[in-house]
Image 1 (spheres, rainbow, N blue to C red):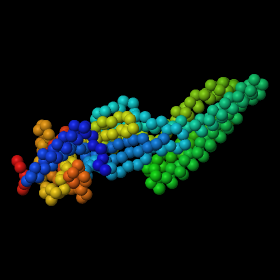
Image 2 (spheres, rainbow, N blue to C red; image 1 turned 180 degrees about the vertical axis):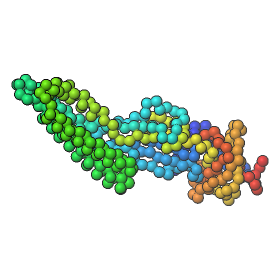
Image 3 (cartoon, rainbow, N blue to C red; image 1 turned 90 degrees about the horizontal axis):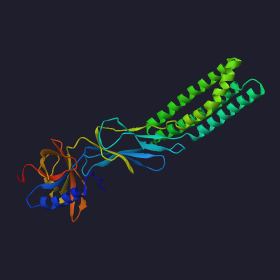
Image 4 (cartoon, rainbow, N blue to C red; image 1 turned 180 degrees about the horizontal axis):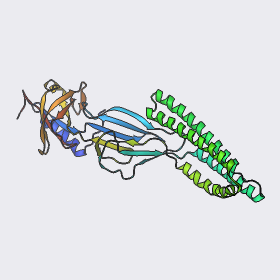
Length: 336
C-alpha cells in the first residue's frame, strides 16, 4: 500500500490527468509528485502508549515506513499525553521537544499520604498528652516510604531492562528506569539522615517541627501526584510541522524537497534507468529543474487500467512540497 502523501484532492486529480497526457506515443514522460525526503509521525497506540514512524521519501512510491516503535508505554497508571505548550504548525528544529507524558504515581501517593497522616496524628497526640513528640517516629515512617519506593523502582528497572533486551522498549527506557533507582536510593539515604537529625533535636525544635509536619503532609502528597514520568519526544530533524494534534499527534516533513515520485507506465519501464538525467516541470509552470533517477521500483502496481512502477528522482533544486508536474527523460525519446 502506498503511504499517504501530504497533498490535496486537487493534486491527486492533477496526477491522474497528467497520466493521460504523459503517455502519448513516442514520449518518455510521466507524472510526478514532490515529496519530502523524510517524514516523522507520532500517533496514539492505545492507552498509555504512542507509536512513532519514520518514513523515507527517497524510496520508489514513498514516503515508505522504514522504522517505527512504541516509545511511551504505561507502567501501571494513567498516562497523560500532551503536546508541548506553544507547539504549532510551522518550522521546527532538530531536537525540539514535541510531546510529553506524565503519570500520577498512585501507589506512591497513597503511601505518602498514609505515612504523613500517621506521623502528623502521632505528633499531635503526643503534644496533647504532654509526652515526647513523635518526630522520630515520623522520620522512621518516611524511611519506610522511601524503602517501598526503592523496591518499586528496582522492580520497574528489571522489567524495563528485560523489555529493552527483547526489543519491546527502546534502550533509553531502561536507562531512565536505572536512573530512577539511583534517585530512590538517594531519597532513602536522605530519609535515614532525617531520622538521625530527629533524634538530636531539642524539645523546643521538636515541638515546632510537629506543627510544620502536619502542614507539609498534604503538599508532599501533591508533589508526588505531579511527579514526571517517561521521556519526551523530540524532532529527529529540521522540518515543517504540519499536523499538530488529533489521532496523528505530530507529523513533521523534512526540509529536503528535492525528491519526486514518478508514476511510470510499466510498458515504458525500460526507458527509465537509475542514474539517467531527467527534467521536471510543475503543472503551473512556475518551477523546473533537472534531476537524476535514483531508484526504479521492482513491482508493478495497478493504477486504474494501467499497471505502473514508481521511480524516485532527485532534483538539483528544491521544489514546492506537494507540487505535481511532469518528469521527462533526457536523451533518446525526449520531446523538448
